[in-house]
Image (tube, rainbow, N blue to C red; front, side, top):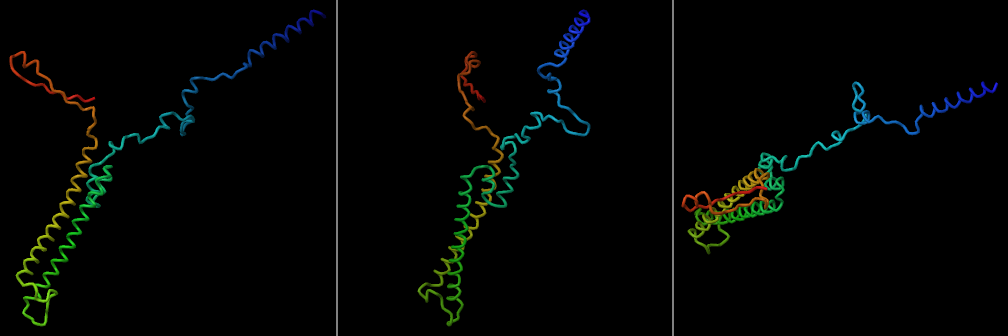
Length: 211
């Protein structure tokens, strides 16, 4: 009886020891399964990787810059190409120059028509018509002033065209030089040429360093 009871206690002890071994206190994590996400047929990976969460558009604005767009913007709306190039201080200059030119077009055109009508009233031979100067200005003087304002009006039109063209050229040139490095890391050094000096000749060596 004692032998049977002793054998039963030994069996229970072995069973408890085996249970403690089979059930660990901490969960076991498979490092390979964590590193490689679970892939289900026809579906996306369950675990998101760093590559999937990275922003797709990581290029600098200079790399995305288009000279064609800058030219088109300035052609459609003067000053818009300068804004696209991020040369914001140039846009008011374009608008100011264009506005000034258009103002003189309007003013000189108005004065030209004024003196032209007065000249016609003096020289038409009709005594019933009179000019605004009431005969105080001769026909030759009216003609001279009329020609002067006509020339100024035409020059104002030319100024408008030049401002418009220069606005397009400036935007295009700036856009093409957006990627050009103009930082302080560009250095130019001048030193005597040792190779020429060894031959008994005078020479100067120039070196351009880009960091």
